[in-house]
Each structure stands twice: as C-alpha cells, then as structure tokens.
Image (cartoon, rainbow, N blue to C red; front, side, top):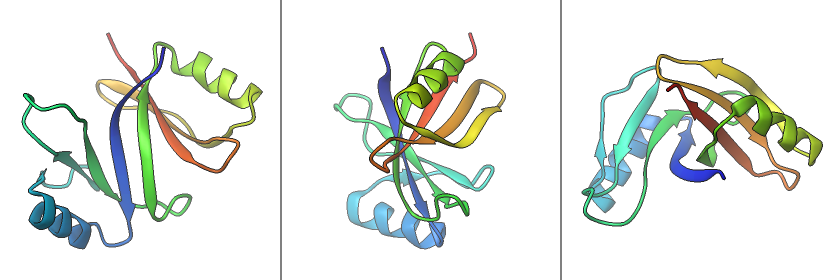
Length: 117
C-alpha cells in the first residue's frame, strides 16, 4: 500500500517561498541540495509530514506534489500507466532511493519513492 510520506512545493522563486513558509509557519528549511530544500514542519511528537521546497522544473514549474512511498516503483509506475497516468519523469536513482514523477488522470502531480533497502 502506498503511503504519503512528504510533499514538494515547486516555485520559480524557491528562496522567497522558503522565507515565506519559515516566517509564517515556523518551518525549518535546510540549505539547498540539488536545488531542493528539505522542510521540517514540526517536531516528531506532532502528527504531520515534512517535505521540501524546490525550484520547479520546466515540466512542473509551480504547484504542490505529494510524495508516495511504494514497495516497487517499477510496478507502481506500470499500474499507474494502466490506469491513465502519464510519466513526467521516469525512474531516477539517488543514493538512498528511486524517484519518479507522474500526473494522474485528473492532472494532479505525484511523486513515487522507493527506498533502497
């Protein structure tokens, strides 16, 4: 079962977005890594999720995407396509995880994450 584990706010001015969310909501925003700033929204003792702020790429310049952790990114991508999704960015490999971006049949952007063991 896929579980929402985070969010990604895409902006063409991520520095301004980071400043806004930090000041208004008290979020802790890390320094950029790969043009992505990790966001901590609260202490671990409270319910909620963390996420990030990124400079939106050409294929998704602004907006919010949820990140869904899956057991098999390949199987999830195939099932999503069979059910009407489109791939925005196919499976990418990072140090500790795989990541892909899709758009569901209604136009909502989502990220799929498979952690490496």
